[in-house]
Amino acid sequence: MKAYTGLIAFYWVKIILLMYIGFQLQPTHWPGHLLMILTIIGPVMLLFSVPLFTPDRYRKWVSPALLFLTTFWMYAHLLYYRFYEDFMTLTILLQIGNVGGLSRSTWELFSPWDLLLFLDIFVVGWVLFKKETFQLPPKKWYLGVASLLTITMLAAGLLYKPYVLKENYNRTQFVQTMSLFTYQLFDVGHSIRSPLFKWMSDPRDAEPMQAHVKEQEKEMTEWFGEAEGMNVVFIGLESVQNFVLDLEVDGQEVTPFLNKIKNESFYFSNLYEQTAQGKSSDAEFMIDTGLYPLDGGSVFVRRPDNAFHGLPEILGNYQSAVFHGNERSFWNRTEMYATLGYDRFFSERDYKVTEENSINYGLEDHHFFEQSIPKLKELDTPYLAKFITLTNHFPFLLHEEDQTFETDVTSEPVVNRYLSTVHYLDQSVETFMEKLQEQGMYENTMFILYGDHYGVSTEYEDGLFELLDQPETTFSHIKNQRVPVLIHIPGLQGEVFDEIAGQIDIRATVLHLLGKRSANYMSFSENLLTRKHDAFVTFRNGNYISESTMYVKGQCLDTEKGTPLSNQACEKGRSKARSELQLSDQVIKGDWLRYKE
Ligand code: GP9
Ligand code: MN
Image (cartoon, rainbow, N blue to C red):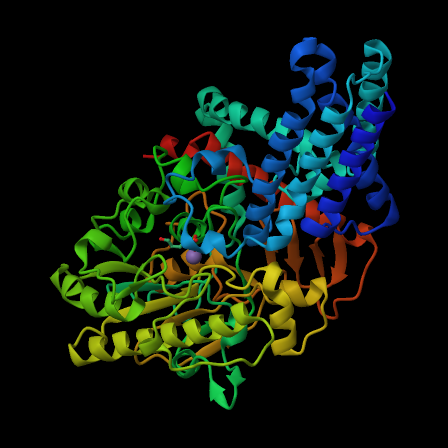
């Protein structure tokens, strides 16, 4: 009996350590800490009730097996968390095949210290085998205490964070408040429930969404229709964060080309990335549809059969194509591009890809652009073309001969390598634009360059704080989540927009420039060219930023100074973010766009 209590106490402490040291969860106030610590014990006790129901012969094996399986499961979450700063969802797990499986970059996430996680299994095995009999607690008493503890702590969690279930997309908050075990059960239930929603939807359900969009004013600007009839070229800048612009390292500019072209473009300097678990595909999705990514997994993978009104459909007579140097199944792009209405998709199989000209996920950017030009030339004009770059992807690798920007400016090698690959990408885009100019393919085109999401995750952010001389705060972290967006129309004067903005707003801005007035149907995108003084950015996890306040990582802060405010000051903003996300989820899960012909 003592040994059994010891086992449970031991496992409890292990998970607490894992939460604090492994996941580095940081509840903001003491009740949050208390809750996170105490909420684990009930589910752990319930887990270890399994041996009480196991026949004597097998009983010895059950506890070590439980320890091993649950440790392994928590470790999978940890690896995922290290890169994505999020907990895995069942949907994302089922998508691993679709996103091309585990890549080489996964190996970077392992640490030798991780072995410590599995050490206890040997300790427990040894204790169990040394003992002849393993006395178990009385069933009724044990189950009673375990259930009582679980229910009490869940109730306390709900009292402390009343929106924890509604904001279930904020998985970190969920795990902190309700434990990783409860999260896992909830997630399974959630994944089962979601297909039912579409089945039960009705055209009338979509009415509030239509009303929501009508509320958005369709203000005019002097630039309306400025790019009407022009070719449209999107360039997805893989993992480029805004801080690299105008940054000098060892006396050299990291992105000389982007720095130059931004002066001749509309440059949105205060624009935040809003992607979730679908990363690159989420950025593409927001640009094409003006809807938020899903709460779990990638919409590209989960909803390719939905009706969406993508840019190709809106642009009508344009020929549309996507160019990408990775395998076509990654993020389920083939299927989703067809749904969004793209005519062509040039992927790895359409390029000459060799050992020498590829690295990490696929074709190196320089070769990618070079080989793409003849394909672009083949398209009928006007065209809508989207280029998705690849080389500046974690873990940021380059062949020796492409290395023109080697630096050890920070003590974090990942950050140093990032600067090199960003520089490489910058050069590749420059060469591409020069070649287009040489071939007369530049003048009549609107270029949209956008960073898709962060490249330096929290795991390596110390190096970033060091590089940018920032204090290690949530406020600095959130500022680092800005990505560059540049809209370049040859011959048009540049302008900097420093109002708060989000990636979701790219769509309406582009449509405005193309002179498409009423095309923003059922979308959350807002035109960035009409300067707003009530600008608002909703993040997929329920956080938000407004002109005056921001809610991030459980804290309410002043947007200007980053100083803490009472949570009350963020209530209105949080509720606005919640309702936007809820509405967007309903449009996608209910497949409401199918109601519009
Ligand atoms: C893969 C590329 C990278 O083809 O788009 O995807 P990411 O990991 O950035 O979502
Ligand atoms: Mn990406």
